[in-house]
Amino acid sequence: MQKHSNKFTAQALSESLKAAQIKDIIISPGSRNAPLIIELTNQDFFNHYSIIDERSAGFVALGMAQQTGQPAVLVCTSGSALLNYYPAIAEAFYSHIPLIIVSADRPQKWVDQGEGQTIRQDRVFEKHSWYNVTLSENGLPEDLNNIKNAIETAIDKQGPVHINMPFDEPLYEISGSINFASPNIKTKFEDLIYPVPFLEKFERKWQNAQKKMILVGQHKPSKFLQLQLEKLADDPSVIILNENISNVKHKRFINNIDQVIFNLTLDELEKLKPEILITIGRNFVSKKVKKFLRAHKPQEHWHIEKTNLPPNTFNALTQHFDTSAEMFLSQFLFLIKALKSSDYQQKWLKIKKKKKIQHKKFLQQTGFSDLKVFDLISHNIPSPYKVQWGNSSTIRYAQLFDYTSGIQHFANRGASGIDGSSSTAIGAHLKSDLPVLLISGDISFLYDSNALWQKYTHPNFKIIVINNGGGDIFNFIPGPSNTQALNNFFVTKHRYHMKKLADMYRFSYKRVDNLSDLTAALKIFFSNNTQAQILEIDTQKINNAAILKDYFKFLS
Image (cartoon, rainbow, N blue to C red; front, side, top):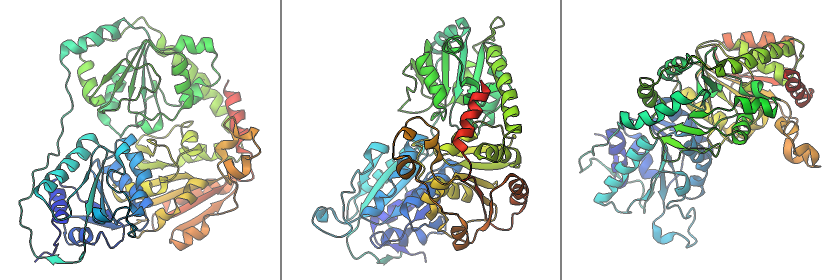
């Protein structure tokens, strides 16, 4: 006979998750959440994971949901444990990743009364979540409906929701059965289909424009979207700009945006300004393209995304299409025809060709450095692979290079923090059918080193850490170098290596600090699949910021 907690709300949660076919449960230890642990771990239906550090657990859940598209469930005890989820919740909110946060709580009468592990948990994530509810302490019929609403909201909004559950003692009592029917949970939400007469108004604007730009930001891999964009690129009046985390690519797309637009004159940029801008996805890495389109605004900016919060990134938004890009384009492509008279796309591709030649010349004469490291990595990642990119300089270097087809790219670009890249990669790896590679800077990796503190890592998980001895991005961006706090409070120089972490968590480890060793190490790194690996690439002795500045000067 199956064991259950005797707490009604714990049972209601379990039955509701099963009804919604939500299986991935990440539990952090505690006592107040004992009813939840008892109820969920006694159900063979669920995949249970124990992650001790709640901040890491939040990002592990995020990585899982990123890959599956289904909510992952976080379960923690009361008090400050819950607050450690907040960085991952903010990332999930802005990256449209579904999470269900379930927190145990003390009875409400003890809040603010000096009781241990008792804080104001009710609606604590309200500003960065789509649904928040505190259930009753003894179990009421509306609790089941509130849980149902939370789950359906997480699925529909593709974002985080919070269910707070107060439990009074005793916490560990067992029941042999449940006494209510499983709820019906809606798990399918259709994309909005626009009426043809409505779309025809935009079709006329599109046909009258000679310069149209489609900018694709962070987006899940989609073969359908890839084909739709290729069809649009047949129009010489259309240019498509994308980043690697958009997971689309084509020879007629501008896939290295900074490389192409850096050092163009104001007059050149004005001539390249689109009349109509369509944005797909969100969270663009390139600061240069944001600066360009904010200064040289399009007449029309249409954003396509199913969201209640359409981003007005360029302060020029004129229309939000509240549906998926695939659904919108499947309608719109039937209405529009390619123009034959425009040379807009050709102007962009001519600049791209010139910059590619300069890029190759510079890399051929560049020695061991962060820039050369990313060049070598881009040529050595085998296909198929899933790459999780760290933030800060790592994701920016990544945009300068091309990658083979079959490589999928992911990053925490919702809130763009460095705090959970490794944990996200761990979670993604646990739900991936392909090998996963994390590419991280040293500060980000050390910051989230508790990501390795779990027992679920498989041999096909690999980590590359580019260790330049600190947050080297602050040596490149304007501002920090003009202060006396550069090394101690911006770059934060250090002398740490990753070997002891690798040894403690039983990762295979290799460190290289020159070009020839790196070339040899990369071949072994990708061919050895017997143990999870960390490859540390030490560039601390190199003036990487100076080389990157020289690179951009050379492009012009």
